[in-house]
Length: 252
Image (cartoon, rainbow, N blue to C red; front, side, top):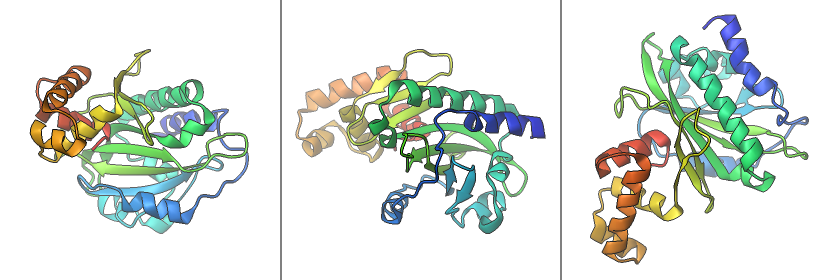
């Protein structure tokens, strides 16, 4: 990635009016609780990006295995520099689209209750490129509601899919609705309800309709209806494909 491309990508965050104008702190207990709940579907690492000064901290040791970086000396520019040159424009436009969603569709009290997700190719320690799934959760806001610190998680998923779906998802936490498989050009997006997300997770655990019905205290007929809606919303033909899309979208 050349310096102009890197600068253009960083400008997505540098020029936003929603960046924190003051330093923010987060609860270490909450942070440790979130990181302890990360489900590993492949090699992954995480770090915290501070939008106040674009510094990174709390970088997990596993970044050394994936990128060959030393955690103590890794910068945000180092991480951005791993993005495949052909994916830079997509990442830039996707980040801008997600920021626009956060600005215009969410209330301040909702900002900490969403996880965003998309994938891109990234350079590995051996110089090859592999598909990474990027997830990010805001940890703090400043007193004006500006973006403070965010936990970013990068998981290698090329063993699940060798191709990108070029879409992003905004996954609601704490009963917020989810917006799945959004294209950059889309003005509207598919929604999965809280119940549908529960069901696709259970499908991913290998449960059939009868088992899911028993777990959720609903009828098998209702489960089958939800399964049908999930396939339609994710635009897939079977539950195996639905689970794959759910993994790429960061639900599972």
